[in-house]
Length: 112
Image 1 (cartoon, rainbow, N blue to C red):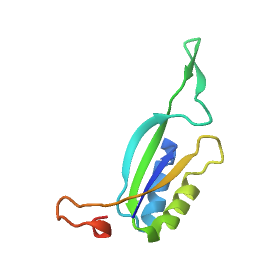
Image 2: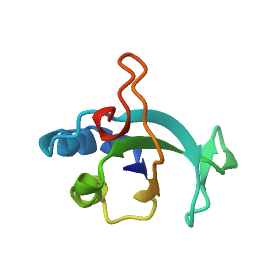
Image 3: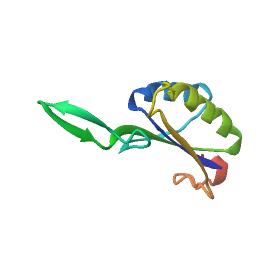
Image 4: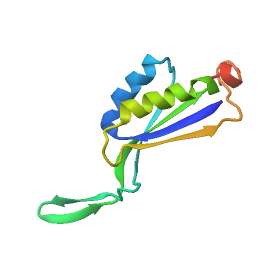
């Protein structure tokens, strides 16, 4: 089993959610986060004063899946989240040792 964590631009959330639903993804955890990568934030003007925005708003998606779906999920996120501009985000894939559904006690891929 794998945990796919994607950090994307907030306005791309609906596009990504639809792309994932189209390929049969049944569960996603969505968190509003702030951060920066290579873009290192940006400067803005507010009432004539310039200030630096160090942390940019992003959306973090977490999807627990079996190994068989990883490639299709990564492809769906990559295509639907891409704008071609800096700050499109990243996808992280990590291993899951165990998953347990609290309600039923199911474990492993049945719990996902």
